[in-house]
Length: 198
Image 1 (cartoon, rainbow, N blue to C red):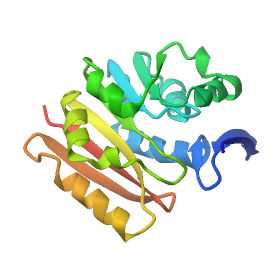
Image 2 (image 1 turned 60 degrees about the vertical axis):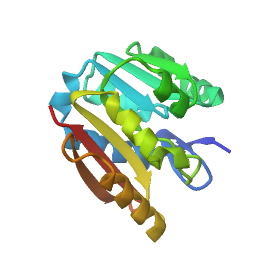
Image 3 (image 1 turned 120 degrees about the vertical axis):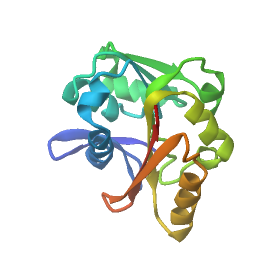
Image 4 (image 1 turned 135 degrees about the vertical axis):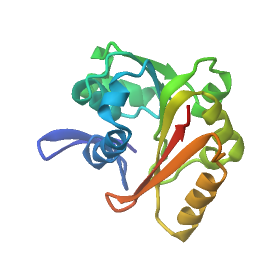
């Protein structure tokens, strides 16, 4: 169940238990992007977004950072894109190409390399298990260009999630990648940033 509502004079996209686009989610991802560096992002050529929802991070990239290059957004739910187009005018963003596909399948198929991969995939407060499997992590890392970044938005609701995130970071090859964790953003979110060392 997805609902579009007004909050503080702005439309937001929510499920029963969490914000999907705009609102707190936009603040969380903005914080992660700021940590990578707006100037660095502006100079990138291709950004991959896994999980589009209402497209708030796309708006941050285009309107705030003034990113002008290519954004590929992968979203499994075509209804979500219809909502994003109707209420948030996502279709007007010329830099964005939306692909309706499963993120796991897309990552296996794509031949492109990316400067930044943003992972923001939730089913309400649940995160699919495949996101944390070593195979998927390794595959995502191979899609990065030199000095590319992964920005992974996760949710921490209990100690098992803490352990899951620590294990995730521990499995990233420290010879090739630098990792950073930004904990407790908007209470329950933790951002993981992975940088491919050039």
